[in-house]
Amino acid sequence: MSAEPVAERRTLPRNRTFWKGTILFPGGLRSSECTVRNFTAKGARLDCGGVIDIPDHFDLKIPQKGETFACRVIWRRAPEIGVSFAAAEAQSEDALTRQVRELADQNRRLMRRIHERES
Image 1 (cartoon, one colour):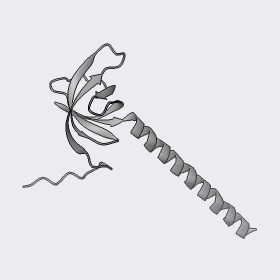
Image 2 (tube, rainbow, N blue to C red):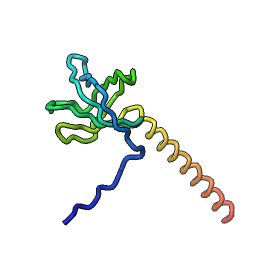
Image 3 (cartoon, rainbow, N blue to C red):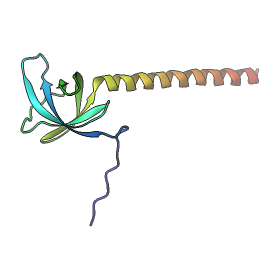
Image 4 (tube, rainbow, N blue to C red):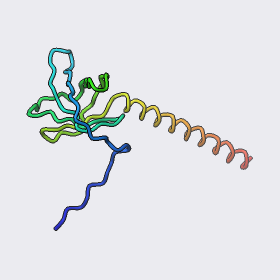
């Protein structure tokens, strides 16, 4: 009996990487090394080794990219975690807010046309 293939839910394919990363805990009092296994503009998969106390929100410093990313943990399967980047989430929310506003405007125009025809 073979298992069904898991449906791909990512909007962007992740690029395989083998980068060093540093998880910076909130408050700056602690950090932990990790390996960035794959990466996109929206998130990454991190190998955290035996570390099990990674917080739900943290900053990830990736020296090879020269950047630090605000992260939110999406899934955990020891020794790895999947994270999304806060900037990517904010952009997605902005796009969703814009789409809702456009649909509301379209709905108002349609309602106006209906009322005009009924008059």
